[in-house]
Image: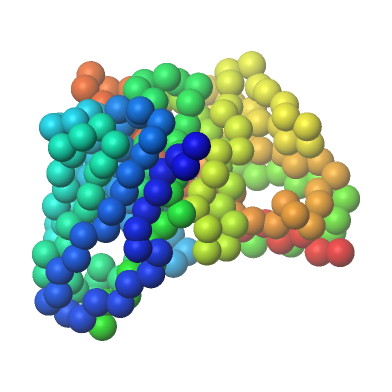
Length: 114
Length: 112
C-alpha cells in the first residue's frame, strides 16, 4: 500500500504566486488533515476533513484553502504565497474515531517562499 | 499554558542508557494519547499508543498519569538508531470531530 502520498516534495515559490499541494491516500480513511511544521515547532493544523464534501478550519487556516471531492484526495491551495508560509507541510489521514489508531503521514512538502 | 508541553531537550545520552521524558497536557477531558517519532527531515511516524494501564513494546514503555495529566516515554538500552525527535500527541473526541494537539517534541541524541 502506498499510504499517504504528497506531491511535490520540494517547491520554491515567489511572493504572490499560487500553487496546490496534492495529497492522496489509498487506505479509505475518512479523516484527512493538513499540518504545517516550522523549524523547532510542533505541527499546526491548517484544515481538516471528516469525509468527502466536508472540510473545516484548523488552528492556522489563513492564506489556505482546501477541497475534498473524493475520499482519497485532499489538496491544499495557496492563493497568494507569502514568506510566512515557508514551512514543511504534512498531509495525514486517520480512520474515523478509533481511539487506538493514530495518524498516517505523507512524507511532506518543503515549501520556500522568496 | 500550552495545551501540550514537552521539554525540547536535547537529551544527550550514551548508548545503552535508559532515558525518559514526559509530556503534560492541560485538557482533563483528553482521551487518547500517542507517542510519535520524527527523524530529521522526515514525517512523524506512530511509535506507540498510550493506554491507561501503561504499555510496553520491546525497549519502549509508555505510561499515562491522568491525575497529574502527563504521559511518559521510557527507552531502555538505548541504541544509536533511537536518535530522533519524539512528539507527544493528545487527542480529544468532540461531537463532530477529534481535536489533536501535537507537542513541539523532545530531541534525543544517543552517543556511542
